[in-house]
Length: 185
Image (tube, rainbow, N blue to C red; front, top):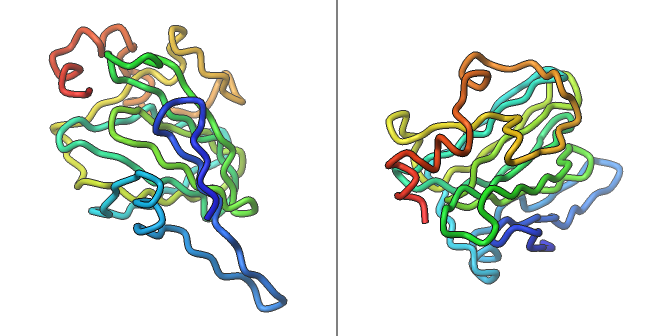
């Protein structure tokens, strides 16, 4: 695996070594020991999958209780996946990085605790897998508005398909003034 830190501290691009021939391919998508060798202490507590149509934005989602990191990969289609630093004491607070993940490039993104994440689906039936470091807790999670001007994510589509929850998410300023924001350091 090729492990590359991105512009935001602790967000990592993982490029697996793909062994392919006329029959197909094989690759290690997640190898906990390799991640630990690169300073990523990750235990898989939950494995999720989503499917989205072209033009869908999901996010920006995060969980503070229990602290939740994610390993995200696209298994079908193509998506623009983003991570936003929501750690108030961080030098990169409110900054974002984005990576194109696809079933062709097989790139994987590690998003640690303290970051909100989301994605835009470039293609119909885009499927993502998420490995969570903690069990999902609906009472300890939230989201931030996908197009918050303070964050300034350069989404591929300015008028995406959104859930009601994501349309009505709070802004980063509202998040930082909430008591829960003090739990993310």
